[in-house]
Image 1: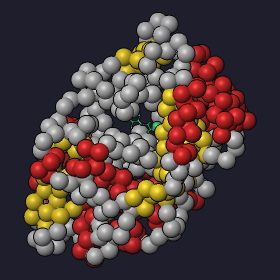
Image 2 (image 1 turned 180 degrees about the vertical axis):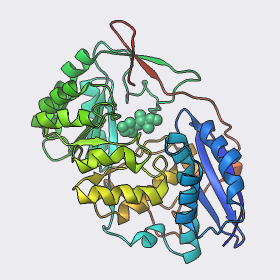
Image 3 (image 1 turned 120 degrees about the horizontal axis):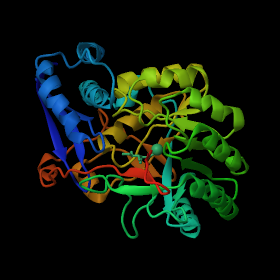
Image 4 (image 1 turned 45 degrees about the vertical axis):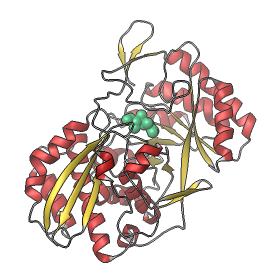
Length: 403
Ligand code: CS2
Ligand code: MG
């Protein structure tokens, strides 16, 4: 099955997505997600200007050889742009191979290890009371695992909290919006938030929280310790993960499970944290960690150390990534949890898909391939609109901080 054409489709049905479409001499097409929130066009150019010319004429069935060709052949290895581009090619080739076999993608990975995929949702509130209401609302939708984020008294804008009446979308402006931050106010607030949520919903629901890289190791240790009475499923991105040793300090002080990895793009980012069991869940996902081929290697390494998967699944990862991730989740033996931020209706219309949600679980469906398509005519009605992720500055002195 020869690759005859490949092109990048950039569209913005409410937010930007970058999609790779590969065509073959057997009339089959494959799709890959190449969306890197806030840096979309960098990946679109990396693909269009540097990768796609090398693909024409290649055997689409040679997924591993193509992965190695693009990884080793780049010379400049790793990084979010390179690995998102490789991921898009890899995902499209897995889609093609499964379609050629007439099988849903998970069957090519080794078949289903479970009947359905547990997912977690986002309950975001302006304040504690609103957040408790949001947790209850998502329970009523069937979710058994709920991520809890809220506004912080004294801070104007905080990660994860939508503006009143709007869907939450981090890439919220044509130039980076500036958020203010106070660790002290945040650390005073979060334990009270979880005390209120647990008091309202009891011990049953799995509760999660995303620190979003904002604490020092000892502050993260303090937060993890203060949250132990509320037995979180995981505390995510507790501290910036460039220094894996930082997690050792957190580990020494708290039993709150730790999750990390949505910004990771290769097994080398994950390796020390997994091998030293400094985290409990690895959050790398298909679109940013080199595709299914590489994510399998990360999961297999993690399985040796009782670390489970927890694939990132925010709305800035396209339905193509969600579809591919659900096939991966159905197969991977050391599955932990899958993030589920439902896309908007306009996004779902551009990306028709076979995956479904019911009662806190999802399934990728039985369509051949990963089960996600793109309506190119509809996509063309949503041209790219530059959008940036926010930046954070310390409220007390304006110094740059981690968003
Ligand atoms: C977040 C993401 O879903 C999460 O866990 O960390 O929403 C993250 O902020 C965005 O993907 C950034 O584009
Ligand atoms: Mg996160």
